[in-house]
Image 1 (spheres, rainbow, N blue to C red):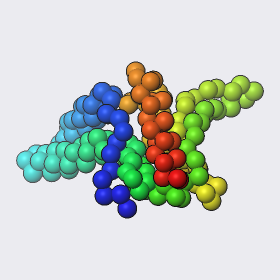
Image 2: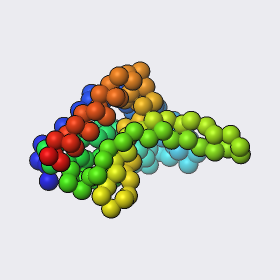
Image 3: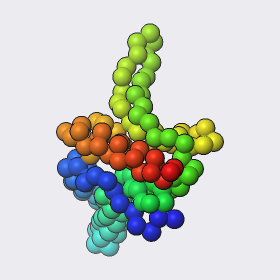
Image 4: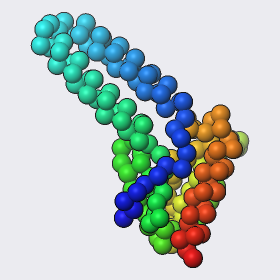
Length: 157
C-alpha cells in the first residue's frame, strides 16, 4: 500500500524542543545512575551507550511522528506504533472537540482530527490543534485537515 507517503505539513519547532528536552533528561539519568551505583570504566560506557541508543531511537520516532497520505490511503505514525488505512476503508474525516468532565464541570481539551472507518470505529490521528506541530500555526492545522478530507473525497470518487 502507498509506496510514496507524504506528510502534508512541515514538522513544528516543538519537536526539536522535545528532542533536546529528552537528551537533557537522559544525560541527567546517566549521571545519576553512574553516581548511584558507583560505576567505573565499562559500567559508565555501558550505561552511556544504552541511554544514547535509546535517545537516538526516540528522537527518530519523534521526527517521523505524524500523519502521512498517499494516493492509496493514510498512514499514522505514533511514537510506539504505526498503522495504515486504505481510503476505501475510511467513511469520513472529522474534527473532534475533546472534552473532559470533572464533577459537574466540562473542560475543553483540544481539537483533533478523527478518522471514521466504515465498520463504525474511530481512529485517533496524531493531529492536535494545540500539538507541537500546530500550536503556533492554527491555519496550518485547518489546511492539513482539509487536505486529508479532500484526498479522501477524491479517492471516494
